[in-house]
Image 1 (tube, rainbow, N blue to C red):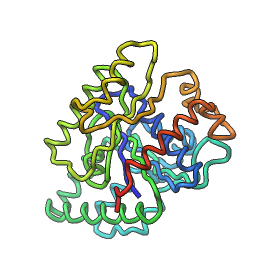
Image 2 (image 1 turned 135 degrees about the horizontal axis):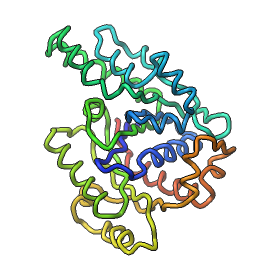
Image 3 (image 1 turned 120 degrees about the vertical axis):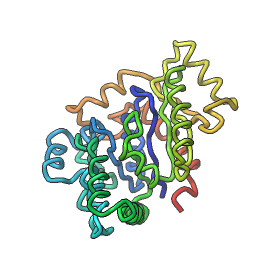
Image 4 (image 1 turned 90 degrees about the vertical axis):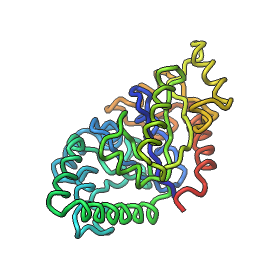
Length: 288
């Protein structure tokens, strides 16, 4: 029942695309899956429920920003969590029954201000008590209701990600097999070490946007099987996700495929199924 962050300090590494695809793959295989959109760009939310429904959630206060704000209040309890969750999301068919979403919000960057307000109103010690209790209530709900929770993060570590790092069990680092992207993974590990974020354990690097015609990409994937930083702590998943027009089409908000295989094409659907089998093996025991 792991809670997993999709995280890298380098942008443009297909965090959101892979987060959504993995979640849809597991859900179509019968797993109960939740996607949490922690990025102010709200791309995962738009891919799963569309712009109109996302705007409705924003207007009605049913987003991650609103949930985390409520979490800081003394009367927050576990039964409040479902009111921030959208059921049976995805553009595949009429939605996938076992795939749910906590939508993102453009207001999430203001979450640090909510923390300051809570500290001002209740005091620093009381804020920490509320936050610890609230995280426990959310974690309990996720463990009881989902097999997997995936948190799509921005390419940074703002206040909401710092809090989610204290709630999550592990993190996956989507990474283009080139120097700049791998450097982002190195910086991420350094940042987490310096911040003392030890609860979330490294699960591995997910090679994405791979181009087999690029020697650098092939070289990094080959070297990724060896023990060198940061891959000694983030062993790469064995199946890379190539860069292809099929993956670009998946991000088209007007694309409404009938099945998982028709959305990702048989080639990519097969790759994601292999990837998910390895993910399941690697995360056994997390969240228990």
